[in-house]
Image (cartoon, rainbow, N blue to C red; front, side):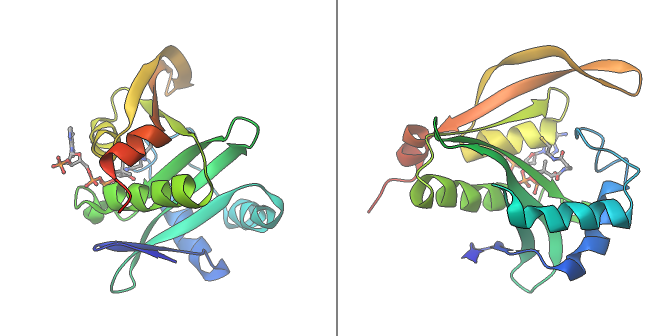
Length: 177
Ligand SMILES: CC(C)(COP(=O)(O)OP(=O)(O)OC[C@H]1O[C@@H](n2cnc3c(N)ncnc32)[C@H](O)[C@@H]1OP(=O)(O)O)[C@@H](O)C(=O)NCCC(=O)NCCS
């Protein structure tokens, strides 16, 4: 378990699946995500079961009083080049812009750089997802480039920013004692 001052990251449990399904069926929440509605219980249960055999780490984000508000995870790890891409969702919308996402990402980055010894953590972010872009910027991510017309969504091609943070950037902002 990884704990900050606002949230902790804990292992997911089967009982969390209904909330995941609720979040991924909300078009406002998934507006900028690769994966949108509809999502069914069986599909999510199959994904949950597959986690055991995958090189993938998923954490639940819960407030310190134990409310499950989102999840965050490593999508894939490239061990040769020591890099990984991550994804996050704060599914409880009234919890947006309270600093939970920034702290959850910071906790995950600490784990990935300090415990798993990764060199680079990266993600794609829709250019119009301004809340997410601000959040990643606060965590120390930098924009590597823009993938124009990277995805077709709702009949419109969307541009994605490629964002990354290196271990050296992380250490600059989080010096070792
Ligand atoms: C993106 C997400 C993970 C961010 O988590 P969060 O807890 O809402 O983010 P934080 O509160 O830590 O930081 C958000 C920052 O953006 C700012 N912000 C909010 N709305 C904004 C907007 N429309 N434009 C610019 N900045 C905005 C907030 O004020 C805050 O910055 P500040 O601390 O300088 O004031 C969360 O909102 C979410 O899950 N959204 C839906 C799914 C999603 O988009 N996932 C990311 C896919 S790349």
